[in-house]
Length: 526
Image 1 (cartoon, rainbow, N blue to C red):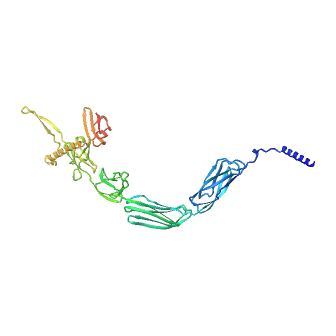
Image 2: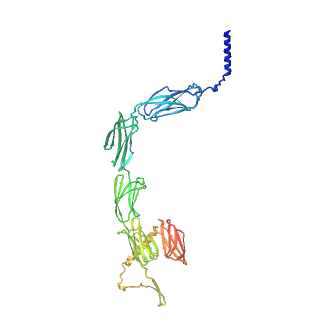
Image 3: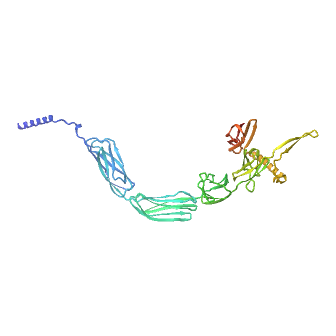
């Protein structure tokens, strides 16, 4: 009976408790994040330069599903290159994820290093230790820096180097030598040490090496490791040609290769002045005085000497009535094809000497009085001189009475005023034969010059109140900066080419023409 009462009390008590205590749902149960990070290999051995594969596993030991887990390796700030990855799959309670990470061993000193595999979830970290043992490494590289070819006479520079790939200090002997076609020309060695990541360097320079082939050898026996390397080069001379000439007031040097391409940076000395050819292989040295000039060229070590004789033109002029006869020589012999310019009170005129060095001008075109004569040639220094001309005596026409029923017209010349008796006048030094020869030479010059198409043609004409000038350029060359001055009074002027102006002295016409091109000027006189 008592046992029955106790059982009833217990049942009632449980019922009361079940009514008074609130029920707890699964959603209200406390969740926890817990991971277990492990690796089957806790100790690794490597040399500098090795890449290690580190396996790992992550187990969800909590009671909630976990996502976005980051796993990575960490350790010393230098000497290693670390990696990591993100686990994007959901890890349910009790699930295990397995994968690997990469670890790069750099040039770190020998020894043991403690690294950790970290699994991160939010702000919580879980880790597993890994010990990496780095062994001693003895290694290095040799290098020779030298060009394949050097021009003869130019400096030859060689750079030698040894770079340490070791993770500890290495020491030993380094040697080098150069072998040419005549044998060993240099052989040296040195004992030294090199720290990890540092280099040993040696620079060699040779001012001049003979023509031929050479080999540079660099060797080293460092901490018991022997290595050797070599490289060859050639000292050569190019097949260079050259030309030296005097032209247009300068000594011109041109250095070129077999394909006639200009060669730059060639040393050229002219009368002690040091120069070098430009990008086109040319040098121009201006000359203002005649003489003999020494030109020395250094053609890749081959020394060449040339002598250039520079001459100046010589001019002389005589007046033959309304003609001016000019002769151009080099001091001894006549010089043909020389451009001669005569400037007088009425303007300028141009001409070119014939094969005998003569050129004839019409003085009515340039005027009488003080004349400036200038001669130019591309092969000579120019020259300029001043001469004085006088107007020839005028001619007077008279008619005499008829005799025997015929009219006779005679021409007499009015002599110029004389200030000295006739017998005191000196005879002209030009004979009739000489004058005839000079006139014929002038005619021959005019024919050959115009046939050669080397001189411009200027034609002038006056019609009532109009004044015309026609200029035709030579067919073989253009007219550049051509200028015509005429003491003509005009009220208006116009030209088909160039620039024509009026001033107090008359008309000035400046123009440029292409070979064979014509231009016209028209002025209204007033």
